[in-house]
Amino acid sequence: MMMILGLFPFMRSTTPYQSLEQQVTWRHVKNDRVGKFARYQYIGPGDDKVTLSGELYPEITGGDMSLTMLNAMAATGKAWPLIEGTGRIYGMYVITGINETRSLFFEDGKARHIAFSVSLERVNEDLREMLGQMGDIGSAVSNITDKVSSAAGGILDSAKDAATDALGSLKGLMN
Image (cartoon, rainbow, N blue to C red; front, side, top):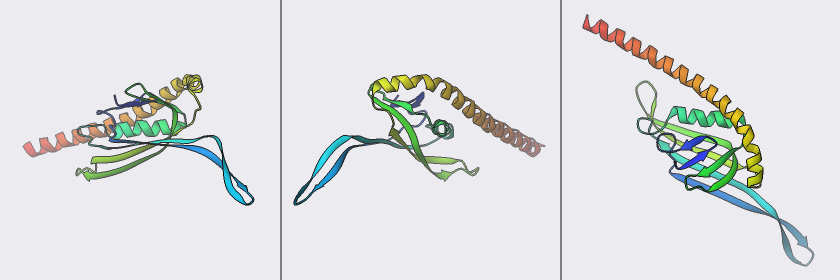
């Protein structure tokens, strides 16, 4: 496992990212002075943003279901713990955006290649606050599981119908 966001693991079989960009800022207020250079006062930490970017080849790596799961997590509006495979705890992050670029299509329109980026923004101040929010994650996970399984059911039904049609066509050709 490369990293985990909530209960979603980033790994080869789901969404392996090829780059991780973290941008951390600190806030300073400018105080202008007459006849002198301005002074700056540190007022605390600013934004902490993480962007995970990568490419999926659905025949080898994760694909639609992995991205559907991330979209469902984003739709909850909940903050999720972000933990690296090495054990480094980044903190609680919300998903602020998911970009997908699909290319190299099969004849049925399914993409052979999906480039993605997931934008995250930190929302907690410290680990004590993060641990206090962990109780809300259980209910959000069961909600996401329901959404993903209903999406998977639709995909499986479509695949079953396509297979039945293909078998019917083959039988027609053999007769």
